[in-house]
Length: 160
Image (cartoon, rainbow, N blue to C red; front, side):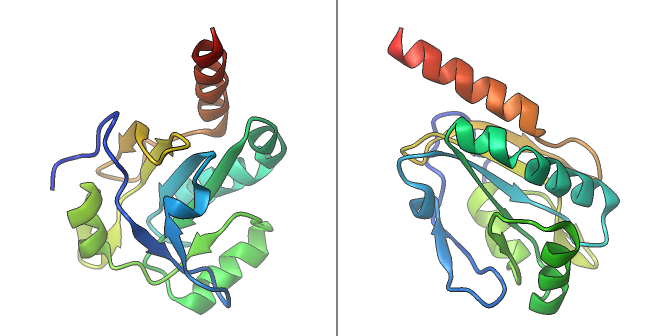
């Protein structure tokens, strides 16, 4: 699968937060800008820092009209523990099929153990990719300030 570049339609992906119904991305965020994060797992310090960063920025993201969701191959109890540990209030899905997601999105996967490498997408209100950030390892990922700045810029120039 080729990488999803600007203007590509983000594919329908299921995201199941612990103990909650499954959401389908990007439809769950239709009408809003959205950030979709694939993270390596709860064991990854860089991923945890990114998730905590998006949580800390939740007020400015909300003010800017940006929704966030994250997804990993972690099992349900591990994901529930991660959400509780960091007080994450955005949907964090568990049990991702890394190979299927890689086929749909071009995300890199680690072969053994199998997990998704850090991947981030900023989507417009129609579910089109504005920016994609693919990492082949531990570093290289979206940060909240960049996302809010970009969306503010896009909003200002859409009305200009």
